[in-house]
Image (cartoon, rainbow, N blue to C red; front, side, top):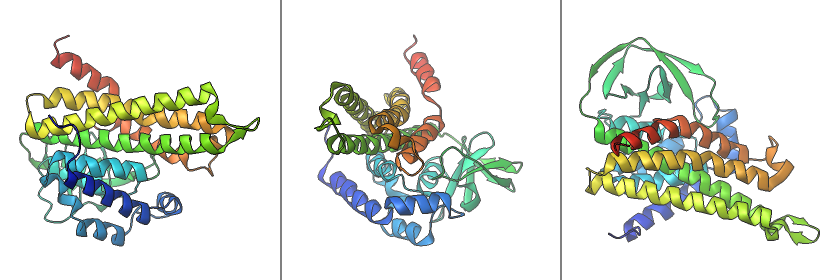
Length: 299
């Protein structure tokens, strides 16, 4: 098995990094999160459509998670992930946007052309009301009532949605770690960079361990979904459990490295901490996925 990305996958990753860096500088992320009613713009969405991202899962699950990681790295406010999830669960989007309702909550429901539930049934005629969420970069809504129709076997689609979320959390953790390492190199105490002190360097090393572990598990799960379906359910739950923890623990540790400045509203790190915390609860939290791992292994 080749554990490295292919040349095409590397190109997709670099293109995504370049595009998202240009379209989502930190000032724009804050503006969309805190000031824009929808949290994203038509121009940004249309450019993603031109890149073919809403349909990228057709290329393969790995290609999708490669972009998902970069979305997390940028903390990009976009309905793309919700659209992916709806499509993975069988929604016929015809170029439109989708969203998934779990229980009575859904991200991006108000701007979706098609709503589906976790069983893949289409939801119509529902009442959609905004709710306040921990993560300001993603709009959440309460969905009540409505009719449900259709649905089917969504086992693979659920696995893909779970791994997509895990990959986004990898990107969140990677960005937080990068910010912490850069700060540790620049910030000096007693005329020495704080990164030279063991308490800081060990914290950064632990961040690296969690980021790389979560990335490896997410990529393996994506590969299994496309090539080894019998291993996919276990791999997906392991990836989601590990990445869910890494997605908030690494930003939390990065806050400690930054010291007092990291805890201020003006510093951008809290946006990644909140995205990581919110991601940890989507499509099943770490505890529920560990329980699923135990069931699958008959422990």
